[in-house]
Amino acid sequence: MTAVITGWSTVSPYGIGQEAFSTGLAAGPLPTVATVDAAEPGAHLVEGFDIRAVLGRMATRSWPGVTPLAVRGGGDVRPRPAAAGAVGDGLGTALVLGTTTGSAESMMNFTRTSLEAEKPFYVDPALMPNAVMNCAAGQCAIWYQLKGPNTTIAGGRAAGLLALGYARRLLTAGRADRVLCGCAEEFSRARSWLEHHSRGEAPAVPLTEGSAMLLVEPAGAVGPGRTPLAEILAVESRVDVDGDVKAAVGACVEAALRGLDQAQVWAAVGSDAAVPVLAERFGAACSRVPIVPGDAGAVTAGFQIAAVLATAATEPAATGRLAVLTVAEPDGTVACAVLRLLEAAR
Image 1: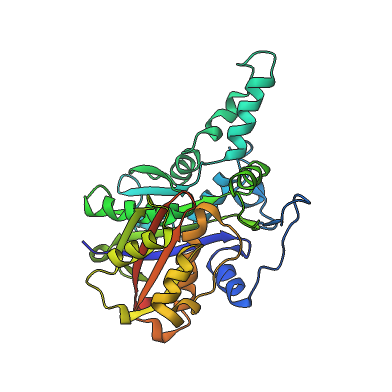
Image 2: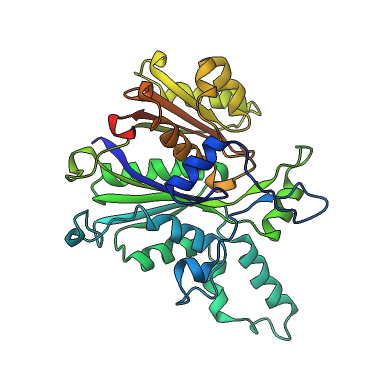
């Protein structure tokens, strides 16, 4: 079974939707860096993202940042009812969302209230769902009435590629007709504090928030009026257990490219420790796609895929060639995906 990407959208510091992302990415560095702490380098925020203005007042009052980012990100690519001329939703549509921990801010605030209140159970029960890691995925499914499998993948910076691999397996196993697949990461003081105390001697990097969503379907099930953007050829993951992350990245890339012609790689996009490995192997292909700056956490790979698709849409030479996307998480998780860019990407 061949899985293809038939739609994508983002909520990013460039704005909401494909057009804002594509235009902002091509324009160069992000326009604003909001300072949140004098000791930190700031953050790339989704400027002007007002939950009530974007999603309405109903049921959104207590949502943490990661939930509205994910819900709004799915709005432009979600499966619509068959009567509207597109694909159906309901039982046939699964949702897979990549995350780091869900909303760290909600978890820490809820726990703090339990510790500081007169009694441990004097907490606001309406806030409890937000402290659960799969809150955003559940709210996406409820908002868009998706009744298929609903899964949260906690993988940090690798979450987007791990979610893509999971979506592909759901389709291969016949557990879903299509998958709304993506990843989301909020900015919060809790996340800033956690990153500050976990990066060790690594230099401080501005934190980036946002979401990226893909519609993934079997190639043979894409209806009229819609065309595939990219074919998912491989998704591989490894764990660095020897303290040699470059070797783990190399092995992961090698496995993902097995049986494919490396000379057909048009673009190679990586993060952190993956960059030098890709540069050594693919050379000029590493400079064809700009990346979203800052540490985007769980949405890192989602922004990578969006950047590849946005750039390929303006490059006729990309048609039919390969894109390699690789992420190396500091805890040792490594993931790699290979996409074949299709005619429709233009």
